[in-house]
Length: 269
Image (cartoon, rainbow, N blue to C red; front, top):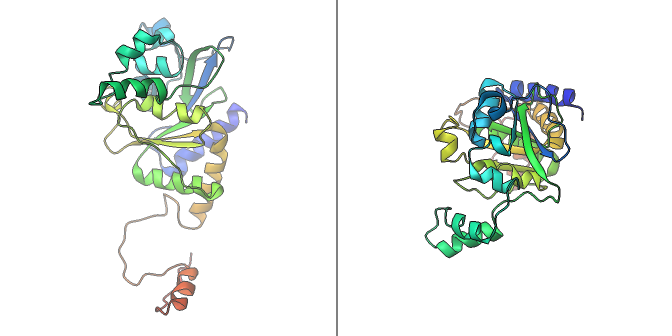
């Protein structure tokens, strides 16, 4: 899709889910790629270096468009995972103990064998991020900061077309890596818990989670959200209530009769 089509999808996501912040468009920049116009280079333009969680906060909260090359980063993990730097054996020996694990050898093995790394043979020079509603580039992935109830609707939409549940492995640290690298490496969707840096420096609220998807999946998600909304299962349509003997979809009655249980009023739109 062209960037303009993603802009429309970004606006629709905000409206359908009543999102507090704009979804984020993220694009990996490889050697030779052109830096998107009108994006801020934190160090070059402002003399600032940012952690990834601070950068995403500026994009979703202030609606900034940023391009971060190696010199713009102030956190080690995106540099490592996006392969903007290389780790030698001494680096792995030293940094491999930084994962809050009681067994140092297990921690080092985690870095060497399991830590998310971008799968690419091309030289990565940086990344660009912008609000999806205004990004002037085609993203590789879309990142949404949302509340759990909004996440529920997004996951229902993801399941609608795929027929599959989203499978995730949750880690309480390095959320900038865990939210993006698996999707960039081919996973359709991911759910991530904001890490301590997100909370302390990225100003992510305690009631927020992160949802990531391949950019190509955005159109499917929006379509499915609209279908769910038309069936009164959208985020906007759900409201807290506790009626007893409530009206239900007709297939509930069909199955209850089969099981010898009492049927009831059929839920109508």
